[in-house]
Length: 301
Image (cartoon, rainbow, N blue to C red; front, side, top):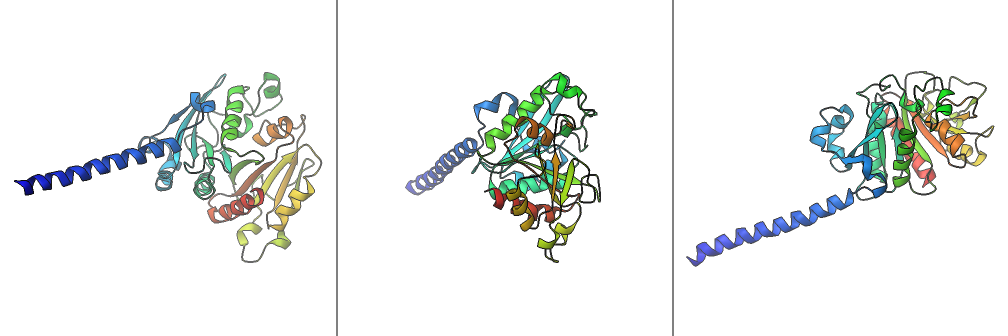
C-alpha cells in the first residue's frame, strides 16, 4: 500500500515540476517575442504551421524560423492592402535590421534569417506570392507620403503614406540608434543593377584589387553594396572602408528630379543624414551574400 502510494506520488511530483518548468519557459519565450506598443496595432503573432502554407520562404526556412519570433504585418494604405512578414531574434531584438521588398528574391530571405540568428535584430519581408510586384506595384517603388511625390514617380501607382511610415516605424523599433538602414536584394546575371552599368547619376567603385582570387563571388559584377545620397560622391571614409573589405560599391546621387520613390531615394531625400546600405548578389548566390553581410555588419557594429 505504502509502496503503491509512493510510486503514485513520484510521477505526480515530476509532472508538476515539468508543468512549472514549461510554464516558466513559456513565459520567457512570450516575453522575448513581445513587440513594442508602437507597432502592435498592425502586427499579429503568426503560427509557423499556418503561415508556411502560403509563404514558400517561410517553408524553406522553417527549422531556423522556429528559433525566432515571427509576426504578420498588415498595412491598409489608401488604395492597397499590404502583407509582410516580420522576423526578429527573441534574445537580442536590437541589431542589424533588414528590409526585403521583393518576394521573388529567395536568397535574400535566406540571408536575412542567417543574419538574425547570428547578429540579432531581424528583418521585414514583403509578401507577394513569390512575385516581384504586388498587384502591379513594385514594393521598392512605393515610398511617398504625399500625392505630389507619388505623381513624380512613373512606377508608383498610388501615394502610400501608411506603407512608407509603417516600414520606417518597424525599422526604428529594431534598428539600434546610429545603425544604417539596411536592405537585401538579388538580381539576374548582369542585370540593371550591376558593376557593368553606370550613368550620369550612378557611379561604380570596384574593389577588385582588394579581392583575393579565392573570393570569386565577390569579383562577380552582380555582387555589390548599393549606396545612395544627395552628395556628388559617397563619403570617402565609408567608400574606402568598403573597398578595402573587398566590397564593390555602386553609388546613386539622388535629387527630386530623378527620384523614383524607391526606399533608397526616399531616405536620401527625407533623411539625408542617415546611411543606407543594400547588399546585392545574383539570385542563388547565398554564400557570397552571406560573406558580404558578415563584412558589412562588422563595419557598422
